[in-house]
Length: 485
Image (cartoon, rainbow, N blue to C red; front, top):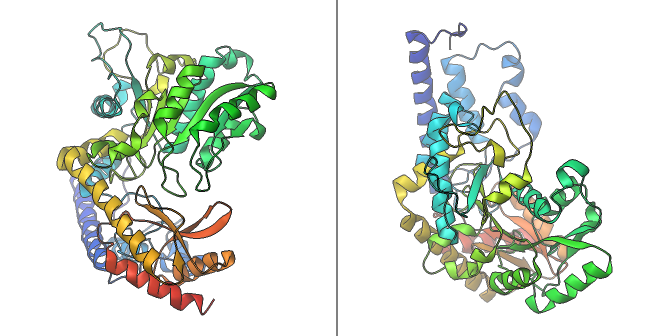
């Protein structure tokens, strides 16, 4: 590619852009075809030194000079050493298998580069964020935001798109803090606050508690059953423990579903308890919220509308490219209480047209996340997305039946989503050794997790190419590997 003369998008440069995009698309097509067919290895795992040399890092940093043939070679190597999310044997992490409308949106975003926390910097993206958030609010069961300029000031929900569920969880707890301690923004977080959450909550919840200045000891564990599911009948005991410790409950967090197990906390009784005691109810539905689009799986989310805040990651079960997470609040006014900062170079009064997400977000420069989510729904429709959730949940139920029926294997629970833990034999250390060896061989990509203090193998069935045959091959590989590690 020619060295770009600053500010000059010449016809030659645009021709170069188009040619290189065509090269990338061609290689991506090969990558997708070989991955989804299972012809390529499941992962790109290799020593860093090997990848470093293959990508010719020292040749191009800092001198530059990557031309057409070198770019083609680079893309081939880069894809070869990448994880093949579309491979049937990729059953590891909760990363969405990106549908192509979202991938096209990522290309458009990369070329236009509209950081759209304020409306004037990305009016199209801001408009779509407003629309996508309202679509989500309706599915949760909350009143959507009124159209700007209508003069409607009645109570309604609100939301913001963020780069990931960790930021969304932190923002939700900021809003919860503002409700119980409105002076905290100026005076600091009171030391007597506490957050109640099951121990298997996503690590970002405990991290947010410490970031807020409460300290790790302010995260009070809820009583759970042997699979880590919150027991509503024990919530009063947890509240009394908080009170005896001289603390006030700032928020209570429930999983829908838990990252490690894919199991759902019973939202309705938890929500009713929180309403009775005036406790902010936060539902971490990063993975599970897309089941709201389903007719046969949405019952797992019964009671989600009782939450004060909900996190919904579109980059998981909505098949949207990373990252695209939504924080939704039942009372949109809580955003205004959470943040109080002013920036005269960004905010120009209160009577402007459009929709700003800056007052609701930790981020200032924020990518146009809404385009990826909008295009995915616009191309596929919510019915198809709901059917995808149902099908992957059903496939995981079939995998559970296969695993449970196989001698030497066991499962600690019946799955409620597309996440399942299981083990081979009774040796905790063996589970991790098996996982590591399968990844090293690049044959199967799966993870491990703890359930009730024991180590288990863990699969997340995201890919439509993963079927019963894949599961049988995985079980064969585990048995073979167990005899060698």
